[in-house]
Image (cartoon, rainbow, N blue to C red; front, side, top):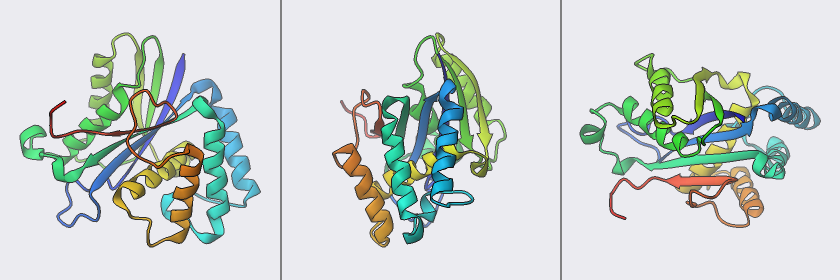
Amino acid sequence: MNFDVYCDESYPDLLSSKKPQASYLAIGSLWLRTENREAFKAEIHNLRDTQRVGGEFKWQKVSKSRLVFYKELISWFFSKENELRFRCIIINRERVDLVRYHQADQELGFYKFYYQLLHKWILDQNSYKIFCDYKSNRRRDRLHVLRDCLRNSNLTSTVEDVQAVRSNESVFIQLVDVLTGITAAKFNEKAKDSVYKTQLIAHTESLLRCQISPTSLCEKKFNIFRINLQGGW
């Protein structure tokens, strides 16, 4: 079976910032069967047209005038049940030892966490195309190396490509931006100054029927992997 995976991140500069604005870096991914791509895209565009939302939508644009749209978008995501899945990795920047484990290279560390996000959900006998929100990297081969690592660790599946896509060109990148933003805001307690973002988080949790928090690997709809960087069990 063929799958598309769309990825985006929240607080991507935490590993290098000298004045960090949060504690947790989040990298999110949206998973769907390739055969559903065009139908789902059309449904999102229809939702945008109905709510008269033009241009790019994203977590940073949640506002009073667009709150109904964002709530309906989240409701739509949950209505697709396991045909549309979200997985997010949460990294505590204070636990990351760049010197010891990542050659003092925050960019290398960032893509190692990207690998941890993806490889457990790449299953045998399937084929995957992975689309990452465009990010300016010091080394141009980062996505190629990520692709090769995923291929080497998933020999009975096919990772066709890992490529960059600008968010304004993909409603799926925009959707994963919103879902990742919701998750990162919950862990970083960053939505308190915005009543509308707080309401959107509450709406998401009402559909989840629980608070946004780490889940087990077997959670398939809204999976949150808070990576343990301390060792132990």
